[in-house]
Length: 122
Image (tube, rainbow, N blue to C red):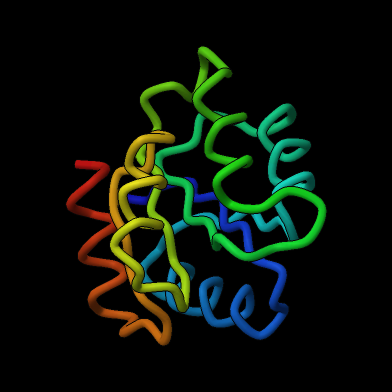
């Protein structure tokens, strides 16, 4: 079943890789290049099934972005997967406390990413 997924990452290469993997699995992808653009995309977005966000971004980092998502009643329960090069336990805990659903370390395996998307949004 097709899902609508918002990806938030400041790396164009990573956004392209995410779009390729997610489109290949039949999903619709909305992209934002940092946390502020992600917040702006939320305002005009249809119902989202999953959000995938990086942590280290300019203007508004992933933690701030997750905080903003969780303040919006329409997206309070939307699953959020963090996709980052970070693997620090304290950062994982901080992301969980902010409202993240899961954590995936870059580089990602497309099949595992799709499996994680399906697991959190089924």
